[in-house]
Length: 220
Ligand SMILES: CCCCCCCCCCCCCCCC(=O)SCCNC(=O)CCNC(=O)[C@H](O)C(C)(C)COP(=O)(O)OP(=O)(O)OC[C@H]1O[C@@H](n2cnc3c(N)ncnc32)[C@H](O)[C@@H]1OP(=O)(O)O
Image 1: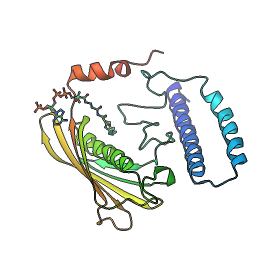
Image 2: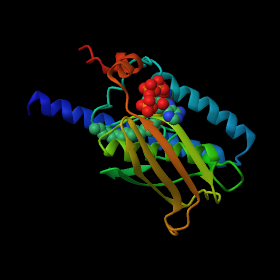
Image 3: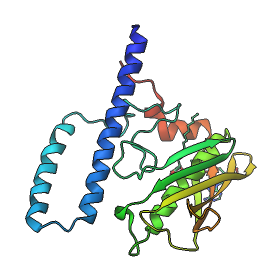
Image 4: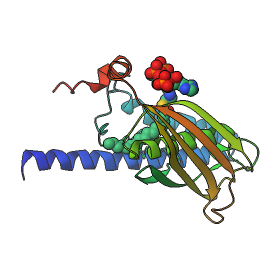
């Protein structure tokens, strides 16, 4: 096997392990949020979790370093808080996007609760920001969100399969507008939350100023 194939194999194996750890963390969060176990069990669990966290903290990256398993240009972000399979915060949302249109699916557990039984409004806004970002990126004009407006029409139920949609609606020079919505998978035409986002494509000097350290090739 060539060195290149071996390193691709190692990268894929690492991503698989990161996803596995992410799944375990999400299970932990969901159980820790829903549990009504005895108080003593909570204390024992906290101790075991601190012990498990210790070795992971022995080799950590700085803010200015991209995760070894990520591929920024290829769009692989293992720890993104919406889509990252390695993120304990991510539902995670599974997204397909092309030509300015994105469709996503996810189910939100009790950890995302705002009003009882329903999603926190900030979580809905976060999901839609990400969805709009995918639509904008897939249109070939990636940018950063400069404005996000959300309208909450009906509460978003937890523990229910959701369907998220987004599409680019307007392009004006460096400014790209996208619109999106959250519905349940069962009733995709019944809109629960809508969002309109304005994205701005960065000028070269803006990209350099904001992302200079992560744009440089990794030192080997
Ligand atoms: C090939 C790979 C595939 C991979 C596939 C992966 C998919 C990957 C998906 C990622 C999905 C992530 C989705 C989350 C996206 C975030 O979460 S981004 C994080 C949140 N956003 C931010 O932190 C941005 C903070 N803002 C800034 O840093 C600065 O505003 C920016 C963006 C550098 C722009 O600088 P600026 O000086 O404000 O604007 P400037 O460049 O002078 O002007 C740009 C234009 O925008 C206008 N503008 C700026 N702000 C506003 C505003 N608030 N309202 C109206 N107009 C505005 C200006 O007026 C100007 O208009 P024109 O004069 O050109 O007509």
